Length: 51
Image 1 (tube, rainbow, N blue to C red):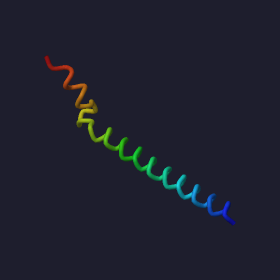
Image 2 (image 1 turned 120 degrees about the vertical axis):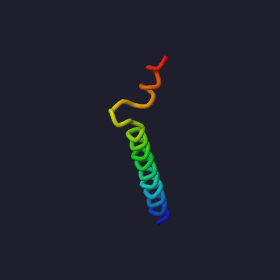
Image 3 (image 1 turned 30 degrees about the vertical axis):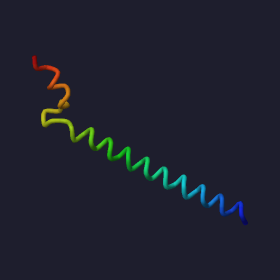
Image 4 (image 1 turned 180 degrees about the vertical axis):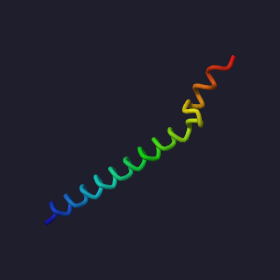
């Protein structure tokens, strides 16, 4: 019975970690796409062109 409790605890931690990691990756990728300007180039690329 004690082993079953440990299996449940490990499963909850694993699922929670996966949820947090996948949510972080979705937020991170949406931040990267929001940095693009209307012409499709990133703000960093247009900043490198100016002299």
